Length: 367
Image (cartoon, rainbow, N blue to C red):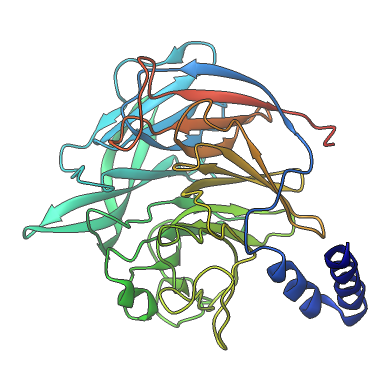
């Protein structure tokens, strides 16, 4: 009872003191995973199965979807015809080693005019692993004419980041991991442990925070989810070290702390996570935004997590253990969520149908 009264007093003080104090109260109450407040997830349907370690989804203008498989294949899914058996494209030079391989995928926001599909993948050069971003021209159901637009991203068998998405500004954002070298995350001269921002042809935007550099934010360990809310704010999920997984609000030029601070730790000049898992482990990957809520896929947590962005920043957990490890979540053209499992990656317990593409209906009535 005394604890509840103390928290209420803090909240009242915070409201009167303004947003800085309010954020401090949020941090004080997020040392462990918050409890569920309400349920928003409806019926789930497996719409495709038999995928091999899928990693990312991207929607085409007609509502069909492109799916990456880590061994180096791009698959095509259409609601009317299902999963196409033959890959649209196989990339023989993709190096599927550890957490590397064919990872993120994105479609140009003006696809009808610029029919480009972008991918992030790992390859070998001079006996070393490297990550890059390439784009392909898409004509009908054919992908061709690879053009490398960003190269020399440090790679390793772990911590490759790999998410690519176009933002509301029409620019391409790329998440990179620390490639098992935490010190690189703090170096503005390395592309490792960063969120990068480039144009659709690989150029550096004039208003990037570090002139002449694709670096948009630094101090990341292994960010694998990117999404924008209705206000145009960028959010990112990030794998912590065994625990203290993070959801961060990304601002240009800011430092998100790894490996100096993690979880709810603070330090001048570094950003503290908005929500963090404390002693729990989410292993968060894909991230999507819909109707005031962020949704992120949990690998080790084997759940779909919802973060309500109203004043209390409430975290809710869904589908716990129902489909195993979840890698990706996107909002489809039909307003449903689409998930990818990752049970055949050597860390899960696959069933005969794995890996799967799952459609999830969302209850628009909220609570």
